[in-house]
Length: 157
Image 1: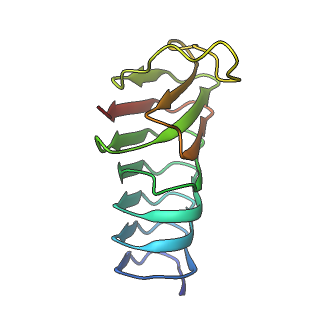
Image 2: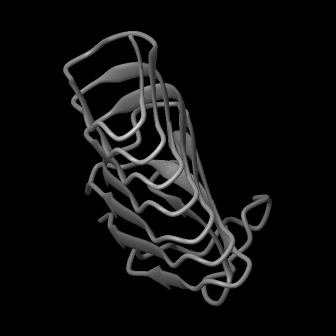
């Protein structure tokens, strides 16, 4: 499924396969879907609820990104916003490695990360403008970047 628009809102639900949604200023919502998911908007908000992606990309310049769910199993998730918040609400069964970075923004974390094993490449940076950690067994990879927006992580165990 490919949807492109200017100011219209896009809502996609219960889709299996490749999903591409792009708008200039309209919001995008993807719910209960799986596959390769790509969403981008210049100023529109991006929302994702219970998606399971093998490859996932969400990009906006000034719209908020909201993700709620468990990050599937074995996928790669990339979330990028230039100046607006990125809000992650992980489910208790979520299993992922996270690497979050903000140049001028902040990172607010409410997910308990255990200390990484000594042989792990995951560092235990937990505050400030970068955060790396593992939730459960780290089945998926989550990369979150923002230039000046706040990154908020909550949920988990």
